[in-house]
Amino acid sequence: MAALCRGRHRWKRTNCLYVLARNLTGKFDYDLVVIGGGSGGLACSKEAAQLGQKVAVLDYVEPSVRGTKWGLGGTCVNVGCIPKKLMHQTALLGTAVKDAKKYGWQIPGPVCHDWATMAEAVQNHVRSLNWGHRVQLQDKKVKYLNIKGSLVDEHTVKGLTKAGKETILTAKNIVIATGGRPKYPTNIPGAMEHGITSDDIFWLKKSPGKTLSSPHDSD
Image (cartoon, rainbow, N blue to C red):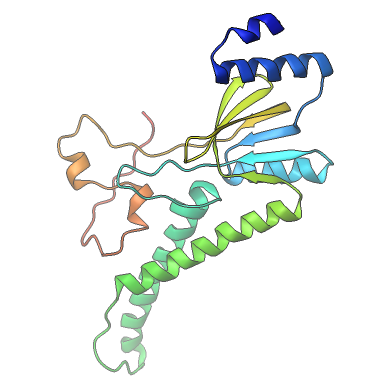
């Protein structure tokens, strides 16, 4: 096995030696490595750590096609439930203020909305949650790695940093909790030029104006 490792490409040779050492010693870097820092991955990692396991979480967000990127927490925190509910509440507040006039509330001047102020408030709240998740992992003694993980074999993960640096992690157990991302429909002309996905709309600095929402499933 060692002779076989010597003749390989540097990274493959390093990986081969890791596998060899693991097979000989039966020891791993971690009891559990979780690929993905969304709701499922975070819950899994913290629960395992609470049960005494040595755990690492790998989370890295590929920028969207429009260049949007975000922090730890997955879809719900960054581009799903949380910003959606905050923007929905914004709309409800606007409607309530307008309706208040009918019930005797004296509202001086016309009611208007500033998108930039709302966007900043939403994004600041999201960033506070990103930080909160990092603190929770630290408190639970879960190792957080901002690297892109890929499965090498049943006990080995390759991590890749933004700068292109590679690292190898071994684990007794590996959980893949990468979630999903929206895609532009390639069969609809103009979708890319005139459409926008949930990866980007919550991070716009200017109002998109009147917008048609068209939910789609993966099919």
